[in-house]
Amino acid sequence: MSATSHQQHRRRRTYALVATAAGLATAGALAAALPATASPAPSGKGGHTSRYQDVQLLSFNDLHGNLEPPSGSSGRVTELQADGTTKTIDAGGVEYLATHLRQAREGNAYSVTAAGGDMVGASPLISGLFHDEPTVEALNKLKLDVTSVGNHEFDEGSKELARLQNGGCHPTDGCYSDKKFKGADFPYLAANVLSEKSGKPILKPYWVWKKKDVKIGFIGVTLEGTPGVVSAEGVKGLKFKDEVETINKYAKELQRQGVKSIVALIHEGGFPASTSYNYDCDSGSAGSGVSGPIVDIAKNITPAVDALVTGHTHNAYACTIPDPSGQPRTVTSASSFGRLYTDTTLTYDRRTGDIARTSVKSANHVVTRDVAKAPDMTALISKWNTLAAPIGNRPIGYISADIVKDGTESPLGDLIADAQLAYGKELDPETDLALMNPGGIRAPLTYAAQGAEGDGVVTYAEGFTVQPFSNTVNLQDLTGAQLVQVLKEQVSGTNAASPKILQISAGLTYTLDLTKSGADRVVTDSIKLNGAPVDPAATYRVAMNNFLAGGGDGFTTLGQGTNPLVGTDDLTVLQKYLTANSTPTSPIAPPAADRITVVQ
Image (cartoon, rainbow, N blue to C red; front, side, top):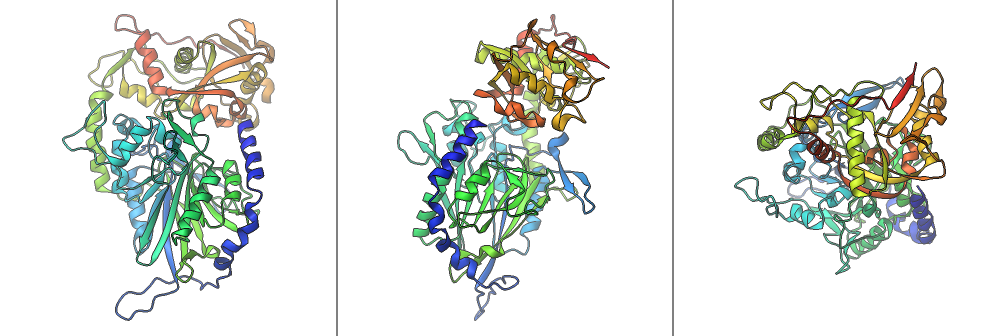
């Protein structure tokens, strides 16, 4: 939190003068008297060309290689109903996303599709196993025109990102078929990611979309804080610059080239006041319904930029946030995992070459699963699933009985927390404990064979079903007082009515008294680590997944940890633990689940 506050303070100081010249940049566009709708330019001999041309901008973000429909809550969105209630809708899957995008483009001769980063990385087995080549192939079929990089594009380093862009077989794993991987048909934009050696962007900083006499520039950046959420190896040799300074710099460069309509693709985002994708976050006033880093960024980006496509926070919003001149500007995010896409109308003024910002309209749409599957995507998924099968069937461990995920404290929750503690100690021997969110455990480990592997054998595919989200296992420091507060947040605040009991590693014990209410249900004096009371003033090194480290599930205090270190994905951590601690003749027994004493 402190880093964010510092960043916002610095921005206010650095960009105080931006507004001075702001009015001049937008005056022409905002003064334009628009017709009710901008008409398309008629074709044919002697046809009259309208001054205004509607351009359809379709966008999405944070796909994370989810080619198949995501499971559980990751495959649903919440929709606000007219009567104020909400309902959930199953959403996502590229077979459906392709159909929705193709239908949306029908009748729109001027249509461009853009993305806000994290197309790959933290991907499910079908994509992650093949270094996300399947996802790039799918995005090519989706006719994606351009995307910014996100932090996860750097999970395997800048050389691997360059391979995804330019093609070629993986340097270690080689080719997966007799056809050489051709790379992305669309440009990855990395305006604020510089090579330490050359001082220049490692990929294109911007790209210009052209259709007849209409042209729109796209500038792509990832969050300046990318090094803090990616392994050091992934960002080796790179510098990440301020988002606002970078976008403003290249906006000027585009203007010098005669490109006056500009869209920024920013892999950084915000937090809407509602989790419903169709919530009106301008119902109070422009930008009042969204908070977080994107607000400060949006308020300081030059008014020469006409719209912002954002991401990273996996939230859904279609808001306006005032630019430095005080004029509203559209800022969108389409949740994650391909569950939504955003449809934005940009009205291009042929006379000025700029977007008439007064007419920009934007809305998020659900990628429902009630439409026909795109056959080309079905074939792509089938091809890669066939290749994945030998890996998915590989044994990674052995168990003596079912290890279930049910209960306040579950045997499987204990096992996963112990695995993360063991991995944390590999990263830093000073690691004290691990915490695991119960919602991240999607299935039990079953003793009975599900295929030909034999009873008691845990396959890679089974492990993946347990932990399918490809979260990273991170370390951070918490004070003893913060650790106590985290445990109390299980049963208070947003979790008061529906407690979320964290699964804890061996050595941490406490009493949960359900006869009490609110935070008092966690008995403070009972909290001990390795038999000793937790010292409020001491510092503890804690392992957890990145979802919790970001304050997910209402654990806001976990979002305040310091000295972060980002590790590998949680499935790899579970696999390492199972492999190291079990054999066919010495399988793992279900943990006793006796770390939390529950008083009913």
